Length: 374
Image (cartoon, rainbow, N blue to C red; front, side, top):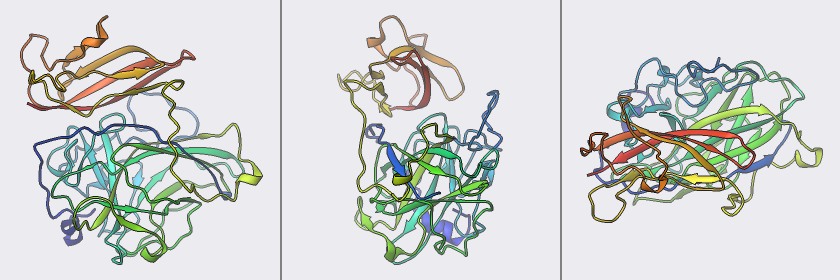
């Protein structure tokens, strides 16, 4: 979202809320079979094979201080429109660029410390759009099957937010050159993948689909292609929301070993949004977004909950990198909001990191943010 008049309209009310409710995190995989169908900027991590450049937005040329600073994110492109540009958010950002309190919603990263956001649509009939355009580390191989995965949420809407709309038929378009948008008008290209149902979720949802590359595609664009009358735009929260705003994180691509079956290639999107987590069998864990260590007996301790995995490491750090808590042999204790000296930690945002081992012995590492409220 740019810094001009249109940008101002989008975030006219940048109001900070003082109360944060819990936003549960879950995984809902969209397994879609479809029509034939950045250097990795994370520092100090060697990479090989096909990658989405800077797929988790962790590499920034500077910390965002307001909305519309898309040029701070290497590996990601605009659609040529200066009126509407996506937004970068970071836990250590300031003003309208920080987390978890953004101008439209409360949201913590799915992983790491940064995410992106964009206005998928404006109010119904306005035909206003923003798009997310990313790039691959190398051109895709024509005829090769890939699995593409990313995460998306609407966050927890704040009281004065202009967001609150849900939208159907979000699409993914792969191309050899970036798409060009005229002002804030919808792009008219036909996406290779459609997310058919109305999307609106306070929680992070995982969207995953397979496709066969038909050309040496170098980039992808995610958003609402076509006019408003071609989709459903629903009011999900708020009295008179004026936009469907989505946060995205953790874009990944990998060759799909299973390939894409011929009889599955005509499916263009799901007819429902299945949640496939089975807590009795599948490895899963949950960490809340906030806690209130005020000794009232409710939500006083920050502690992960896990099933069918072994928790090997759980640590909490301040925004300046100081470790304030580490998992002990008694994991049920959790972090009580105290510093290592036994003093009350300052209210604000902290970063957690976990390492778990699944039933197959694979180590899975994740990180995110927790807000301490007093």
